[in-house]
Image (cartoon, rainbow, N blue to C red; front, side):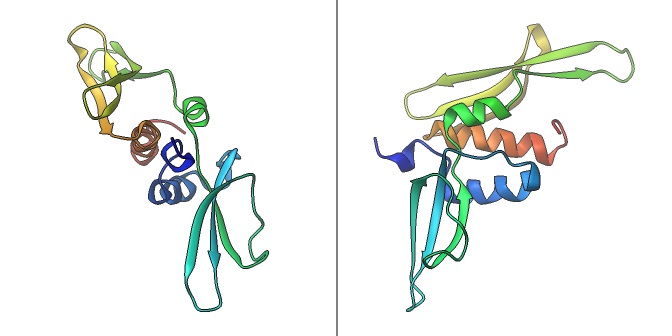
Length: 140
């Protein structure tokens, strides 16, 4: 399995970088974007961080791996009903069907599912959940 299949896609990595801002944790891997004199770009995943503007590198974007995403995602979400003060707990869950990985926060009993995201790449599915949680202010 090549490295690109073990980390979040470049598109999702850019979104995470935007959402996490200065609070973005360091990543073991980074997308390196190199711009050549003719304007062509080469994108690769490398170990470590690359300084911008060093040797023609335009940018370095964290390419989070499964363990790194697992550290950023909460193991559960708690939601209180406004009318009753009843608290529902939604627990982090990963499942695999024939083609896709599914990442969700599922409640116990009749609570249902808070979020369910599927993707062929588990890192991407986890990143999509993290993006959803951040965009909807479910985590800080």
